[in-house]
Length: 484
Ligand code: CA
Image (cartoon, rainbow, N blue to C red):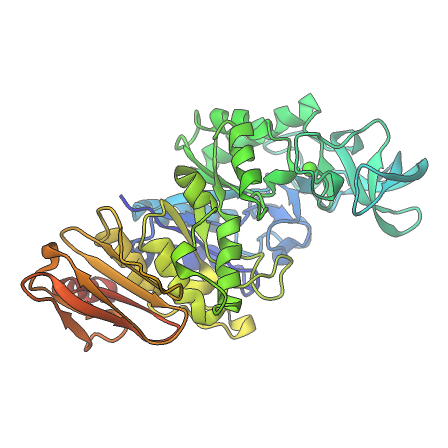
């Protein structure tokens, strides 16, 4: 089975609390298209209440059920609607990935007085001055939830640091007295344990116990089939091996996990896979940056070597490849958008070659109105082709032209792709298994290529574009399926 993940959100979705309902209505369409797994955004209440994208976690147990932070519903809807949308996806045979954000919590209910030291932003191992008295928002009692599901209350002893002192009104990274950052995190900025909010301390046994208890509750109640793990380069690398193993015993016995370790250094990702016992896949961040670079410097790029040195090449079974996401889209923290003209080429590379786990971005499939981004042309067709036609080992037809790549996915339903990051391109393909067939270009179906009795024909591609050729009869089947 050819898996295709879909990230079912972008940063600037309408704040109409309708995403879960939209997803329920869209489930059948996604299944027809060939999506096999959907990554849903964080489903629990954030500090921003009904407006929080989901990463400013306030209460992991509030899936849109309690009137906290000014709203019962999350940005995406109510708990009932969330559970309904998971059911709708399951009915269509689509597996569901939950976004798990355990690095930090925000929006404490009360302040506490404790002692902390200022930490340098660019080297978190360096202190500025001595420990001093601070007043911090680290007390979480969840009064609206009133101990339902869990009576665990958080306090400063459960966190390593925070970034706001109520006494002096200043924003600054603070590390609490008696605490150290974890040494099993990325060493970016000296130590990347801290990102934002109140940083959860995974060395405290009762914290780890609570996160296991919560995970079991959540896995049971939601029935999710896997996880997308947020910010793992800031979480003790030992944590998820045990947590994921435990979660497999509950709910739908989720087996699948993909972690967000944001680094362009493939060696660092390969090392993390080792350190975490290969308990999860990782997003192929180096490949994302490669695609982004080609899109901004086509002239100096080599399309034949896109995958060289990426995680997809080094650890193909553990690489989740993607073009863009909610963090790399325009206006966001890790902005590194793959330029629009190159998007169709990037998706043929991800979907129509041999990548095991490609992830399609909502903003690419449906567009981003906030930034006038249109849907990527033919993306729906590519997903369908991947699911229904793609088989066999890829045969490359590259030559001495760095601005062109061409390949054949052979089999009963052959697929031929030719892409150009330069001018108009042509490539002769010679393969006896393709003898006397009529191919159709999915962009312009009137454009047909007929092979001779030796399986020879010239396949072409316009400048800065990509052409996908499939058999005429497969094209008819596809259009019927997609229009149903
Ligand atoms: Ca952390």
